[in-house]
Image 1 (tube, helix red, strand yellow):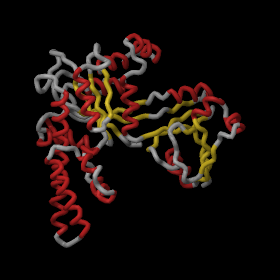
Image 2 (cartoon, rainbow, N blue to C red; image 1 turned 30 degrees about the vertical axis):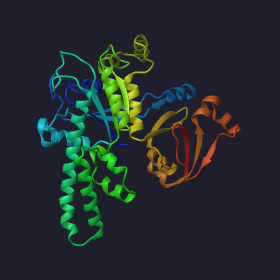
Image 3 (cartoon, rainbow, N blue to C red; image 1 turned 90 degrees about the horizontal axis):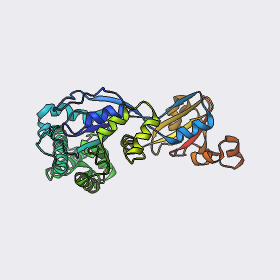
Image 4 (spheres, rainbow, N blue to C red; image 1 turned 90 degrees about the vertical axis):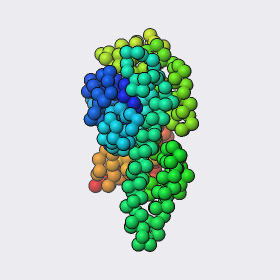
Length: 367
C-alpha cells in the first residue's frame, strides 16, 4: 500500500521501545536520554489475523502471505521543535510523510527515566506536541500564502479564493486549534485545495497511553489522555511498552499467549495497536485462497473490484471480467467452495462492486 503510521511523542515516552517490540527487533536504539533516535526507523509489521489461521486450517496451503503495515519511529519532539529546537524541523518533515499518527503519551512515574520537562503531565505533553505541529502547519500555510498572493494579483479568481481560504486557516491556527477542525467545515472544493498542503494536524491520530507494567488497565494519567482523545474524536488505547517488549522476546505464539493470560489480558497491546492503526489508515483485507496459497491482501476501504484485482496484478485490472465473492463468515460455516455454491452463497459481481473486508475473491480476467 505504501501507507505508513508515524510514531511520535516527546523524548523518553517509550516510542523506540514500542517500535522495537512491534518489529521484534532492536533496530531503534532505546536509551535514557533525548534524541537517541535521529533518523526515522521504518518497520514492516505482520498483522495477526485469526481469519488467516482459519483459512489455513481448511486449505492447508503450501504458502501463507499475511497482511502487513508500516510503522515509522520518528525522533522525539520538544518545545520549540517548529523553530528547529532538538532538530525539530527535520523531525517534523518526517511526520509530514506519513498518513496517520500514533501519539505515544507517557502515563507512568519512574524516577530512573528522565522526563524532558521534569514531571509527568499528559495534558501538557500532548499540548506541546500539538502546538509544535500547528506551528509547522502555520509555517506551511504562510509560505503557500506568500506564493499564491503574488500570483493572485493577476485577477485569477481561483487564486483569489485560495488566498481567502489560507487567510482564514491562519486565523484558525492562531486560536491554537488543529487543522482537522477547520477542514471539516469546508466544501469539497476547498478540501481539495487544502489536501495539497499535506497538513500534519489534519492526519488521523491514535493516542497510546504508555503505562507501567503494574497498571495495564489504566490510571489517573490515562483518564486524562482518554478525555482528550474523546474531545478530538481520535482513537485511544492503553498499553505498557515494557510488557510488550518482554512479550515480543518470547519465542513462540503459545508462550506469548500464556504470558498474556498470567497478567489478565486476552490480546497483546501491540496487536490492538496494529489493528487500530490499520483502521486509522482506512484499510481493509480481502483474501485469495487455495491449497496452493492463502494470501491476505491490503486495500483502501471503498475500492471497487477491478482496482482490488489490480493489487494482485495490473493485468487483472486491465482485463477484469468479474469477481466471484465468498463471504468469510459463510465459508467458515460450510468449509468448501462446492458447499458454498450449492447453498447459493457464491456471488458474481461486476466492475461496480465495492470489495468488503473479509471477502474471499476469485477474479476472472482476460488480456
